[in-house]
Image 1: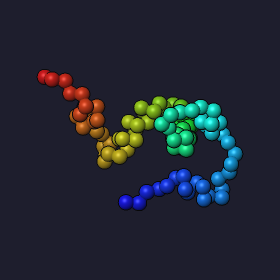
Image 2: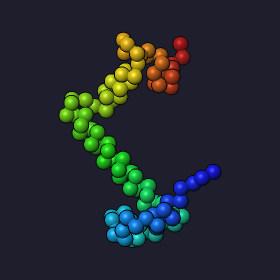
Image 3: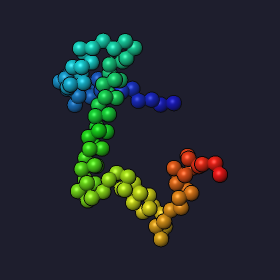
Image 4: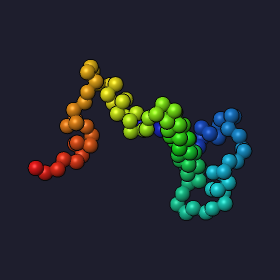
Length: 101
């Protein structure tokens, strides 16, 4: 099985600088037992990107008068063949919660 050795690849990449960001500074100032600071830094940066993408998507959707849930419904319907309908019984929520009759 092949794996990606993130640490080795970053160490060999000349584009990676030694400049510290807020995550590096936080990790160097706090002792977190059992936590690999390099892995934690990667995870924190990915979460930061996720938050930024989510904020940008919300802003774009609001420019069109949509909320995230409405966009998901429209996207789901677009994937259906005409007449672009979906049975409520086939929705994820209907499969998860089905009251006893």
